[in-house]
Amino acid sequence: MYNTTEISKNLYYVGGNDRRIALFESAFPVPRGVSYNSYLLLDQKTVLFDTVDIAASEVFFENVEHVLGGRALDYLVIHHMEPDHSASFVRLMEKYPGVTVVTNQKVKAMLSNFFHFEGENVLVVKEGDTMSVGGRTLKFVFAPMVHWPEVMFTYIPEDGILFSADAFGTFGALAGSVFADEVDFERNFLDDARRYYFNIVGKYGVQVQNVLKKAAGLEIKLVCPLHGPVWRSNFAWFLQKYDTWSKYLPEERGVAVFYSSVYGHTQNAAEILAATIARNGVKNVKAYDVSVTHVSDLLAEAFRYSHVVFATTTYNNGIFISMEHFLSDLKAHAYQKRKYALVENGSWAPQAGGYMEAIVREWKEMRKIGETVTLLSAVKEDTRAQLEALGGEIAADVLKETDA
Ligand code: FEO
Image (cartoon, rainbow, N blue to C red; front, top):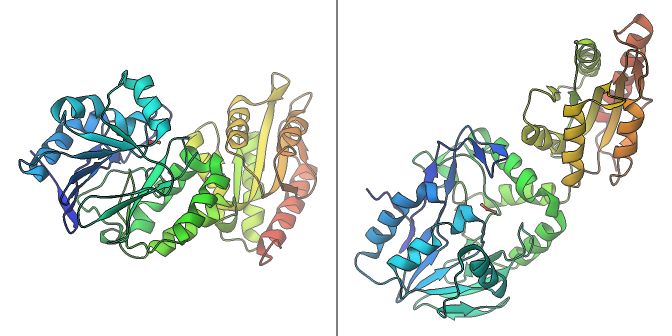
């Protein structure tokens, strides 16, 4: 049965949720599910903005049919070709063969690659092109590499509506409310939004900054992303988050201590360090066992804080597996602009610190605090003193108002 919401005059939410999915894109746990958003505009022409993942396709097609109310579907605007938004394309074309696809040249090529679609009824648009659909105008704003090359936004100037593709999206299914201001977004969605941003889009901060500059020139009243709630108020608050995130700046002054530990000694060192930092007045301290917490959460937390600690055992003459994976994921997402400290352990030949330092030094604007603390198995009084000294240095640095 259909389940739609009118989100603006004659504009309807026609997407759906998936709470059965275990791993989004086979990579990211989504315990709160995910929504696949699609929007249908009724003007003199009818316009569908994107389709949905197969998981939400049944309710999606019922929604579209219900909102159309017997009218033909004139246009399908495709902003992004990842299959979580395009997988229902073929069935849509079968059901509404008269529809004209409105999109860009890169999407057209991907339609062929993904679906062997070579149809003639494609209207190819370019950056800045406009088309009237009756009382409203669609203006196309390209957003390359946010986070795929074909991505574009659509802006409706008459209503100040921006269809923003994956940008401003979040993990987490919609629980009845479509609008961000109908829920406690900061409590219910911000952690998921941050994790979504850094894992999916985060590598492309420069491109996000470029599109934010384009968006700054638009009067925006409603933002319709492809995942998560629709924004109709207080969008400036979320936009500020995106600005901070895409500049790779810390969201909060604080410390995230990341450790891997085989027998508990490196954990012990990490906890002594965390306790010292807290005892020195830092309230914002987190500690994570990187072998336990999913790397997508670790990545988001690393980007969240101004200071990070990497503490790990030496393993197979290198860095312990889960820490090596985490560091490699940070590198892949262009991690940068943080203060860091290192702790290494090794029962006979501790070497992980040197290997970690070689990796971190390749990242932009990383500044080390103190010397690497080296443990030989368990923490002793001398290494405890070194950890406490390091913790004091880290705390003093965090408590400075700024790194500028
Ligand atoms: Fe939600 Fe990039 O797909």
